[in-house]
Length: 253
Ligand code: PGA
Image (cartoon, rainbow, N blue to C red):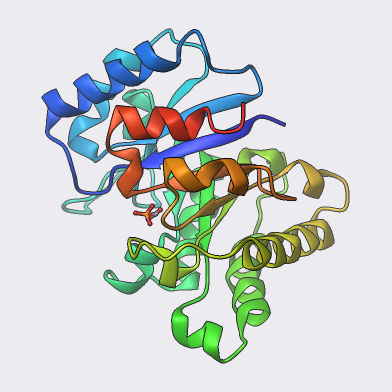
């Protein structure tokens, strides 16, 4: 199973900066990227083509979209369809990121629609899940992860192979805060996620990648990436610079 080393650029970078960063990443990683790792970058919509130019034809580099609307086309002012993303060279998309859940009030029902629609339209989906600080304090980790996964997995399209799916466990209290979950927290949550995945997919459940996200940096990635059931990382802040993200991608190689 290839480890997925992903950067979410959120609402940062104009086209030139995006293309330069992507080209620098290719330069730094091209000859060093092990065959069991892949790089996925999620730029803002406006920089997708710029990053595509830099990644096109490079083995191990993929492009992802941070969002889309779950329909083929239609009167949805301001929205983007999966077909449009594929047209720009995207093969991945995020769903359920905590910023979408909290700032844009996307609930499990809507996230689940997006998730199934993306998969049915041949986009590899990265489903983000994770508990808030309040839920953590109330010892609700298991319940929250079960609920967030159930909303999407109960409607998992039967014709799709489950390995088209990645889960990103991102404790909300660790996103953009500098607060990293401890190794024990990460292992506990990832083991829980694996158990839930195996209950839905007894065979393929072991092949679904579980990424960790939340203040991943060059100096903590090596220990995180080697933990049990950690099959990659989803990086925000430290994924914006080619220097720090390339260190993260190569951590513990
Ligand atoms: P961070 O963001 O690495 O800046 O904490 C992670 C994310 O939002 O996916």
